[in-house]
Image (cartoon, rainbow over the protein chains, first blue to last red):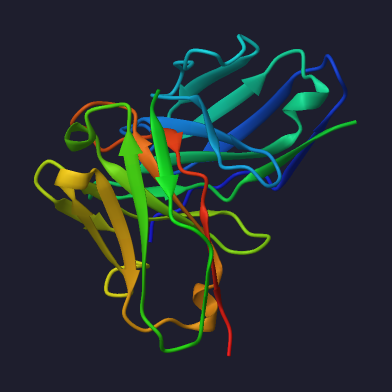
Length: 107
Length: 121
């Protein structure tokens, strides 16, 4: 089955930049979406279609794509950004899959 | 205001059946795909399947095909996720989520609050 691979954890000091990667064979051909999930809450969309930011999402969140790897970048990390982050994309059959998830810890 | 409101927590025994719901409001329910997502305790998100209320077109993840049924009642703007015979391993939080683009099965911009399903003898 199709898999999207993320690093299990990323640690970053406040004000620094966090980069979370997501790798998958079909990522060069399919859009990627990124979600933030805080404890006890439903996920929230932070990036759609690789690099677009929904209204209300701070500009410090950005997305980029290069071949079979996509990256979520959080510039100037704040304490409130501590959460789990998941990428999501589709395989060639049109069914979706989530990445393995990355826990971002703000030191 | 777009809202997805899910039915309340359930406690069931192994072998029992269950149907949970997700009611959409504040948008054209028929025009946006609705996905179901599982999150087992302490684990990551798992995409289960998706349905288009306009014509009930449904796609399942291979991992969930045959294990659950996704359906919709368009007149009452409600999507459903059901099991015919629950297992203890079905214990999880289940979310519904609305696709972000009209007519397209893509990422979700609005999520329900989640329904906690506990299966225990």
